[in-house]
Figure 1 (tube, rainbow, N blue to C red):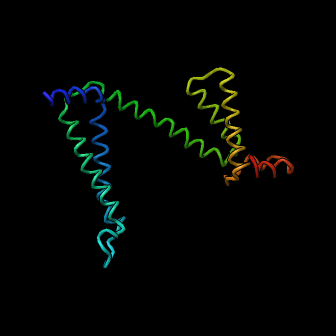
Figure 2 (tube, one colour; figure 1 turned 180 degrees about the horizontal axis):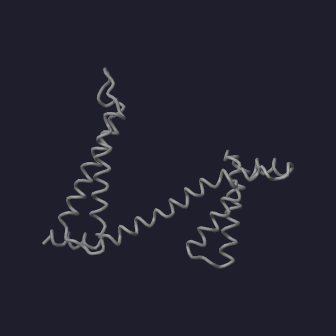
Figure 3 (cartoon, rainbow, N blue to C red; figure 1 turned 135 degrees about the horizontal axis):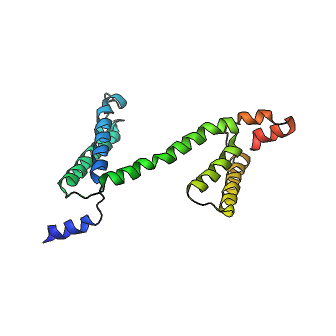
Length: 178
C-alpha cells in the first residue's frame, strides 16, 4: 500500500529523459573519481581530517553513490515515452551557449558597448519579442550595462579594435568608458 502510494507520487515528477541524465551524471561522477589521485594529494604526518583531499573525496564519492542510485531507480522504473524529445530540448539549449561564445569573440573586435547592445537586441529578437519597444528597451539595457560596468565599476574589459578608427578625442573616452 505504502509502496504503491510512493510510486504514484513519484510518477508525477518523473521526466522521460531521466535515464539519460542519470547515465550522463554517473559517467561524469566516475570520471571525477578517476581523477582524484591526480588532483588531490595525501600529506604525510597530517591528520586524516586535515588532508587537502578529504572533502573533495567525500563529495565525489557522494556523487558516485547517489548518481548510481539515481540511475538504478531510473532503470527500474517504467518507461515513459518521449525520452529523446526531452534530450533534444536539452541539446537545443546549447544554442545559447554558442551565442554567448560568439559574443565573447565579438567584444575584442567591436568593443564592449556595441557588442553588448547588439547581443541584447539579438537575444530579444531571438526570444520572439519583435516590437520596437522591446528592441529599444534591449538596446537601452545594453547601453546601461556598459555604462555601469565600464564607467562606474571600472571593470577592465578589453577595448575593441573598432575603437582604433575613432577620432582621437572620442577614442580616449571610448577606451575608458565604453
